[in-house]
Image (cartoon, rainbow, N blue to C red):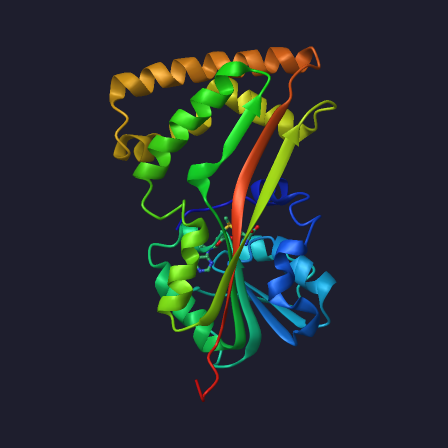
Length: 268
Ligand SMILES: C[S@@+](CC[C@H](N)C(=O)[O-])C[C@H]1O[C@@H](n2cnc3c(N)ncnc32)[C@H](O)[C@@H]1O
């Protein structure tokens, strides 16, 4: 199972749901009990708690992350593909950036349909379509190059995005609809600790090294990897220099897709 740190989740979700129009199809105000599967630190569960009077349950395979999900009414350790929850226990079962991390996302969606009496929702990114604009010119092209090899080599479908609709339909859900929601994160002065740490990681190319197995599986040969890593470190040093001059600005946009389906009524 891919592991995530609480800091990473808190940082990458900051401000994500400041605009909640894309969640309208979840009818949050009308919900009684909501299950957030793969809740992590509970960023989406917190939105559910704010937007509804429902009882909100956060479930994750990593109990350490759940310790941060303070806005949920209940926290439950468990596996998305074998939910420790009885049939028809909730009227909304949702996830965010979970299916892209699962070897068998269809099994999870079937579980969501079993546990929900009404709606199932998947908020999933297309990580193959992330865009980066930066005052360091090489950052845009190097990020795109590394991303392409990573998406091709990683073992789960991290570019799932709007294709989650097929999974919901295959699980027997009906009236499936999808809304795109772009999450843009901007790094600009004054830089916080997370931005300074991210710049330092670029200068060492540590994250690229962590992704070496996926990059290789995606077709990046050893000599091409060495070239990419050298260019990445040079780019990182330029990022650090621009930050010291207060000139560095980076804008990253991750397209998310909010896909919602309904459990069919008995008569359908
Ligand atoms: C990218 S994080 C998303 C967390 C949170 N939904 C968010 O958007 O901030 C993926 C989460 O799925 C959890 N996860 C991965 N595999 C799981 C599984 N089989 N069952 C339950 N949770 C799982 C991870 O522990 C992690 O918290």
